[in-house]
Image 1 (cartoon, rainbow, N blue to C red):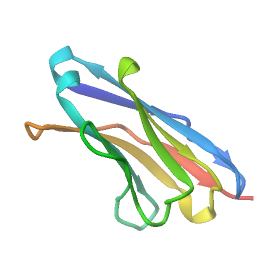
Image 2 (tube, rainbow, N blue to C red; image 1 turned 180 degrees about the vertical axis):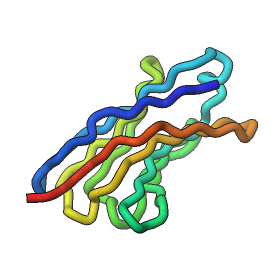
Image 3 (cartoon, rainbow, N blue to C red; image 1 turned 90 degrees about the vertical axis):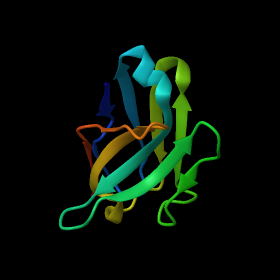
Length: 119
């Protein structure tokens, strides 16, 4: 099993920046089986949507709405994935969730962290 714990959500003004972190913990076999991690978000009244993805064997991918503003990165030594968010807009307001998946088809979700962009 893998546990994902997000942190870094906050209230920020438009144009500001935040960095979200997602720390993975659990048994070493499951941790080492992770080959894809991602950030999703869900705004009130909307469906959950993927924001950014990072894999073991490919480059990162981003939703069109965040390209050029958000950057996903991974520190494998710390089992942590980050989401650097710059030039935040009110429409970025949402609960942000961390997601991890293994090649065998197992997947895990974090509990979410609130990001609010407002003046």
